[in-house]
Length: 311
Image (cartoon, rainbow, N blue to C red):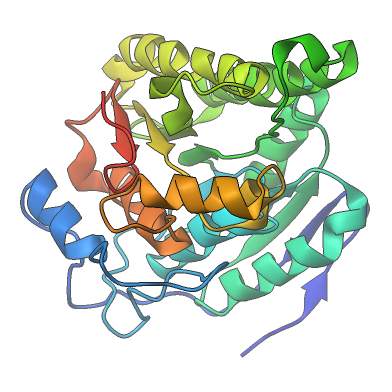
């Protein structure tokens, strides 16, 4: 097993040279609902904070994504790390994007976990609100792996403040990361993803909540739904599907950074199981949408929140 690292400059590779082999069993087979029922854990099961998906192992996963390359933005930790590792379990090589160089060690840990699944990883850092960064991210996919097939637009920023208290700088940050960054990544994906590729955007269940103090965050995320619908129409003839998922509150530092113990308890009480979501509640849906047998699902926003909100 080759565990050598080769990091150079802003774009670095973290490569495991052994090739993945095809497994025998399929995790996601049959209809959409049967696939979800098999993949998503029961809501009644309590899970610890920051758990990475343990619903599958290398022994029982069919490597349906072998030969594919997935770009996951904001993959240094939290949901992004969960998406990257689970896509790797199913055979995809991964481009791990992270925003700031001071978080590189966390991104390297994601890359290590990806490598443990028997695939390769490349690192890229930078502000996705800048077209040059987005181009470099796709360049990393092509330079290291020769292609790009799956784009998971996970990177995001959050703020919880009354409208009257949101500064110009804070509003600009929300728009730059949540709105502009998603658009620029989709634009580059439309230009460079392989035919029959996948774009999976991460929105928020707050789009159905009209929750006070989240106007800047939810407002900057609202465009994701429309980009998803329009993207599915424009790219459908190439077999590229475009979908978004809208998670409810998930037990991660991203969520807790804006909440108090009291508001956390209230948010948890709104789900059917009386708890926050866990990373491995959300991950299987992203993996399912990346699979070949999800070809007939496009232009959709899928809510995944344990009954927290419906629309």
